[in-house]
Amino acid sequence: MMMRFSVFVLLFFCSVFAFGQGQPGQSVGGGEEKVELLPGADSLTIINENGMEIRRVINNVRFRHKGSILYCNLAIQNVASNLIQAYGNVKVVQGDTITVTGDTLLYYGDTRLAIVSGRKAVLTDKKRTLTSKRLEYDMANGLAYYRIPGRTVDSANVLTSKEGIYNTRSKVFDYYGNVKLVNEKYTLTTDTLIYNSITKWSYFNGPTKIVNKDGTLLAKRGQYNTATEESSFSNRTMVENEAYTLTGDTLFYDSQKQLGFAKGNVEILAKEDKTLLLGDEGVYRGLEGFSKVYGHALVKSVVSEDTLYIRADTLYSIENKLDSTRRLIGDKRVFIYKSDFQGRCDSVLYNTADSTILFFRDPILWGDTYQMEADSISAFLVNSKVNRMLLRSNSFVISEDTLVKQYNQVKGRTINAFFTEESKLKQVFVDGNGQSAYYALDDEEKLIGLNRVECGKMNLQFKNNRVNRIAFLGRPVGSLIPPRISSRPSAS
Image (cartoon, rainbow, N blue to C red):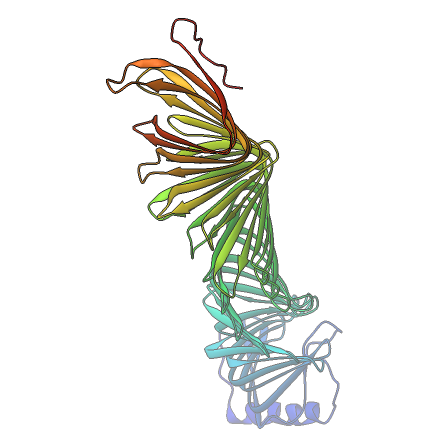
């Protein structure tokens, strides 16, 4: 039961209080763990309630405990429980580094827990501030909490979240719910974030988005350095800028250097020409316009309304930024597919500048009615369709005569093969050591026989997949084998 004191008793206690104020350093309630009331307050009222001493201190109030000073306009102190309720211009100063301010304070002296509330509760150390409407500060362990939305500000960052924990000793932050980190160089949003303000590394878990002037990063689990803009991720991650997207199951990316390494279901997309590189592992060097994938490597390149597919052990994409053209290189066990022809070789180069595809090391190409081989082959595309093929050294072309169901063959040192808009053989020009074996027909399109000819140069023209006209330049040597003794030639 609370008892009200008479004016005489109050004056008596005021005199006691005055005596106490004259004894700086005296602990209230005795013992080193009790909160110490410092002199200087305007007034003190002491009330006994159920045997407990309650003190009401007004104006210029100061307490000291474990090296920390508590300031306020009004304080209610329970001496026995070591609890202080403080109101108005509340401030807690811990050493020369930490200051907490607010409108109200609950301070539990036994555990050294300070709960500060108000329109704005603020914890400040030398380099940053935490702000919320309610802050819990565990002074014994140096941990500051906010369990309602709050924000952290330092010289470079503004971070907001639904909940947060700041370790004032290790300078590590834990944030939960709608986390947003804003820097003049980037913005990071996530569900859960651990941020070490000394090392500048951020560790996050849950859907995460990092946006800067160079692009956007989407991830679910990983770490990011706010100073160097380096990052590494252990879950499906995508990096996107104006020119590229880089995606992988695990990924390391340096935003400043535009350098990326990815593993697992790697995808590198060049947006300008819709070229997609796929593979098990990949490397991206954005400043150089260089990409590389290996392990089940595949490239898809849109050529007008058609798509070119290249598969190889390793694939490279090299961009010329001056004219926005690209070279695609396939190395080792190369397979190529396009709607109008297919092929295989050991090395290939596709240059988007002039729509040329170069095949090296034992290339073989084929279409619906022909097959070509040489030491190297160049395919020239016009309007996304093959227009001409240049075969160099040990060149060989075989084409099906759809009427007689046999195969015409041409060999030579160099062969130029020209195609119609429908990707049918139109003309074959042989330069050097020319040899041909083709089926000759009469005016009624009846088979005359197999014509074998050798000549330095020859020009064969095709119509409807058949030899329509042939010209021999030089001194041809040949023979016609009648149908009755002719045999189907081999395709080698």
